[in-house]
Length: 265
Image (cartoon, rainbow, N blue to C red):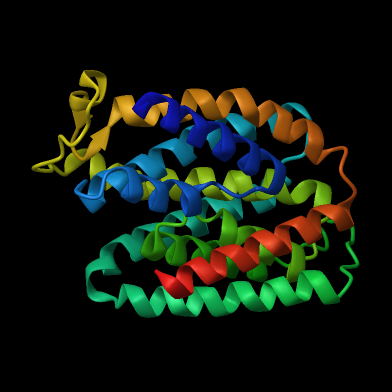
C-alpha cells in the first residue's frame, strides 16, 4: 500500500511537470507530510527537491532534443541567477517567517490566476536580440529564492511569471520552467546531502528504512522519480497538443487550489 501511494504520487508529479512546467513540490510536500506525520522536514523537503531535480533534468533533456529550450543567452542567465537565488534562500531559510512567505505566495498565485482567467495573453516570439535579460535575471533570482523558502520546487512560481510577465509562448513555458526548476532544485538539494538527520525511520517498508545519504532518502526519491518518468512523456505529448488557452485555464484552476492550500496551511 505504501509503495502504491508513492508510485501514484510520482505519476501525477511527472505528468504535471512536463505538461505545465510545475515541478510537483506543491503535491509532494503536503502528501508526504500526510503519509508520514513524524517524518523530519529535512527528509520531506529533500525528497521533494530530489524528485523534482530528477524529473525536470530528464524533461529538459527531452525538450533539448525537441529544440524547445531557451537560447544560450537565456539559459546561462537562468543558470547563474537561479543558483544565486536558491543559495541565498537556503541561507536565510531559518531566519524568515515561513508562514508569511506562504501567505505572500498565496496572494501572488491568486493574482496570476485572475490574470490567466480574465486577460488574454499575447505571446511574442523570443530571440537573443529582443530578450529582456534583466527581467529574466530578476525571475531567476526571485523564483529560486522564494522556492527555497516555501519548498514548492519553483514551477508554480516560474510558470506564471513566464506566461504573464515575460510573455513566453505557451508551448515553450514548460521547457523554460523545467530548466529553471532543475537548476533551483539541484542547488537546494546539495546541502541536504551533507546534513545528517535523526529519527527519520518512519516507514513500514524495509526498502525505505535505509538508503539515507545525509537527509536524502535515495529509495524514496527513486520510487517517486521512476514513476514520474513514466508519465512525463505523456505530459510532453499533450503539452504540444492542447490549445494554449485551454492550458492557461487549467493552470489557473490549479493556481487557485494551490493558493487556497497555502492560505490554510
